[in-house]
Image (spheres, rainbow over the protein chains, first blue to last red):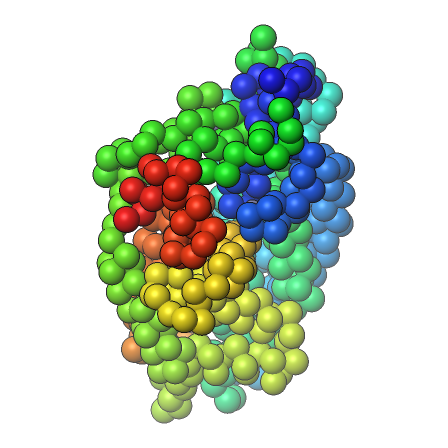
Length: 210
Length: 229
Ligand SMILES: [Zn+2]
Ligand SMILES: [Zn+2]
């Protein structure tokens, strides 16, 4: 029997001296550095998972500032140019009475990125600095965070569609603002951040390890 | 016991992707039965064994629909006597031509390239061909498909289209072209297939070639070969 490594959750592959390939699910001895089956790199836990997650998260937070300050879309309508920020876009829909769309954009572009960044921060804090964590709840939080991330791209796609598809000469045309690139960067960085977080760390500590 | 002997090659015992608990998969999984991790309740795989023909037919349909979606008019705008029609592929090229490289690149990668790559990979894995018989090629595609899946955003794009339409509905008359409806259908099939192909099933498909190494695995772990037969 291989020695039981107690820093990992009991019954886990890592505690039994094994490592699971994250790509093809093959179980191998923990001494392997590359999967003998598919060739992917093997790590018992993502190396520096929390550090990478936080680094990407802070980068996302920095880009979040220009993403909200600068205009995301410039509209040329009947010869006059107007620029709107993300929040401005939401406001326009509210004034139009399109409350549902206003809600969708507000949710996707403002609430989700913020909630997601807070959630990742919270996960890192709990896993790194606290004992007796609520594993099922944190796991659920992580999965929601991971799944919902790409939906923030809605606003970027809206800009892309308007810019590429709508160009009626003399009537209306659109150009992307500076914030479009910043916001796309925020979404990609937060997605990378969530992917760097190793959910197995949640289970390596707490009450389930007798 | 040597390191080599401890190596487990079969997929019958796996570590839960979510929490790393060692879980022994049942030898046969009945259709519509889910295998969940007993500790974290993560959905490991489910026993919905669709036939290869079903999956191959669907992925081929999706690929054809995808080509239609890219080459025919996506949306048609009419305002003040002007008619504006553009296809999805032309729209992403338009973004490049006007030097919006980030936007153009995102649209091209996330909504055109990655979903198409995934479906082509799936189709190639399902259809026997001499070129694709090579395990290294199959594994390369398996790795590629596993890695790109979180970045395919066809569904997000469709919601974006609807929001964009609401923004301009008061200015122009809008109608959906064949390209749009094809993309809707494409997205539907794509989502359906990605839900069926969880990690376990994808790699079972990748490993299924009747090559020397696969036969070896089948001999040492008969239950794996039974399921794939
Ligand atoms: Zn592997
Ligand atoms: Zn689990």
